[in-house]
Amino acid sequence: MAVAAARIKEAKKQGKAHVAAIGDPDDPCQIADFYIDAFLQDARLMNMKVADEFPANTPRASQHVDGMQAMIAKLIEHGHAYVANDGVVYYSVESFDAYGRLSGNTLDRLRTGAGGRVRQEDQAVKRHPGDFFLWKPDPSHIMRWNSPWGEGYPGWHIECSVMATALLGRDQIDIHTGGEDNIFPHHECEIAQTCGATGGEFFARYWLHSRHLLVDGEKMSKSKGTFHTVRDVLDGRVTGRPVHPAILRYELIRGHYRSNLNFTFASLQQSALEVAQLRSAATLFAQQAGDQSAPVDLSHPVLAGFAEAMADDLNISSALGVVFDWLKKPKGTPAVKHAVLEKIDSVLGILRTPAAGEPDVLAAGSLSRDELDARLQLINEARANMDYDAADAQNQALRDLDYDVQDTPACTIATARPIVVDPAHVGA
Image 1: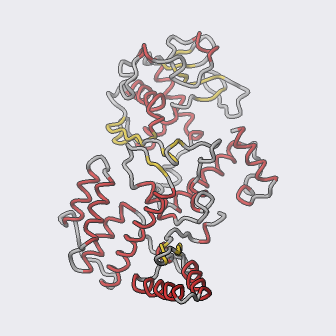
Image 2: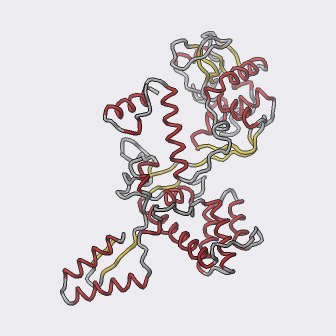
Image 3: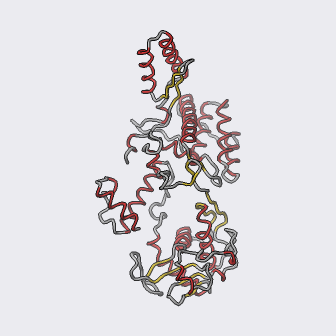
């Protein structure tokens, strides 16, 4: 929190508009509001679905402290938690036989303090090195509440158990997601807390953990300048050119969630080409069908193949393979083809119709193959006649249309640059 406050203060000194709404950078609630709003803005830019019940079902931990205290009291009552000599309430990992099952850890392998953010000097008061704290008395902490164990604050695992069970209205849920770094200790502790309080055999039926995002083959690193935000990419601070949100969305979803995604400029360019192909097909089908869609369901072979791949642990790569194979020789009436692609985009979310005045991803490099070939022929003829001014003028005209132009000894080559962005997003 102190680091975030320092950054915001520096941004305010520099007069940056995006932090103007923060009146007091030392107020943790104002900082939280700022980052929540920024996250939701980025999510909507990326066409992510925000909970229909927002903000009711998009909770804040500070709104559920009473529930955390109630769960802690229940854990103490059930013999899963204890108050140590220093007044801190700890979860006893030895009291829960299944602790470590999700991550593959065993109690004898747990490193000291692995169960939570505990200083070395606090270890002596714990029954087991892996015990993690549920409540810590600290009247000087910036975020503190009254409790039966003194004024203080909750541990960082308890909030998720409480909010999930409270808002979903059940002690056992179907799907729990998170990054691979959350498996241990966070999700392991969630299971122990929830099952210890409810008496259930499990907390979530399925755990989906995504692998780390890599940049040029390595983990993102601020020191190496490879820590990128959504805004950095969209506004062109990463690639040198603004990036359309549909392209970044596609780039981030086209790989399997249990495989590391390697973010590179080349992969982003490939995503741009594939998005352009999908949107071009969607436009063509809609025009041919007069924007009319025919009824389609999973009996359609393309939708059946797409759904079968997605049902195989969200195998998005295979699902996209089904789509692109179909687009090579799409069969069916225009209305059916239009409907099939609409159904597929209910998953992909990249074919949103641009608003009035908003450039489409296809605006760059939008010449037809015949038109492009004709222009290249003019350039080659001008070069052959040594009319270099005319050749240069044609080259520049293609660059203005968002093509990369390269003169080779044999001929001139032009490649479309399909990465564009809504100007309203630039500098946001």
